[in-house]
Length: 421
Image (cartoon, rainbow, N blue to C red):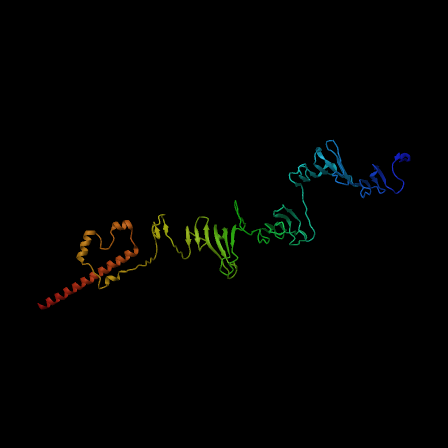
């Protein structure tokens, strides 16, 4: 220690030796010729080198009793500086820049804020986060809990991109052993297609598995003719003529206002392919099968078969075909067994006319023919009635033949009598 002109009292050395402050015969503070200061270290390698040997936990402490507490600042050549503060005398250090603009804030509960002084989560970032990794590796945000499967969220390195093409994005589930269990969410960088449990999406949303929708599904396509659509596919139908695709359209324009079902095979609407309308539901309620322009509530262009009962104009179906109204047709074919050709058999017993007359007198209708009361109650079986009418015509024919025979015999007798005169 000596006096050095106007500089006052100087404490130091004039040789290339360190200046040491001893306590209890031990160098506690060392100042090297290069300006490095060591506290607890005899060979400091930093401008301020603090070292604590043994098990002591406190290497350095800045204590203050004021409102903002202690502050530790770092400054370079620029006017700006960074400071580490203890705010409100609690254990929540804050890193702030010039003008006390907070860059990093750690609350007493452990929440960390970047760009915010009020972090609501363990890491609360107010701004943009950038993540990168070594070449050929994928940057991920990983959740890993002991003894549980882990999840990762990040960019896939399965494709390389240049310029603004970007990379695939995926959410991956892993085992603790590091085995990938698939990507429940995958976004293709080239077209934006999203795959759920599917890393090769073929459309805007491609789901591999079951899906449950607890709300509306809306298909809105601006095509003025086909409108919105729902498509059902079965790739196992590979042969021509097999409908590998069924599509439901909400049609308009040239197709008419209707809901239509179309089927397509693998060739589709090309030459030799299947591309056909199957069922049409018009907006006015008419339904067409085999036609896109139904004019009736059910308009079938082709052959139809019904294995149950059909009722028209009523709800109580007691027969295979029930019609409460008129039927107009050009032809009806009734299959009938036991057709009455047996009337002309020699063994057939034709009732004498006097018995028929007696039956009519008593019952007011022909034998075997249902009465008016029975017809009003039960109707008429067309097949049975036609057979019955034919039977009566055949019986009448036999009566006429017999009458003609009797008349001829009488004529012959008259001729014989006249010849004897």
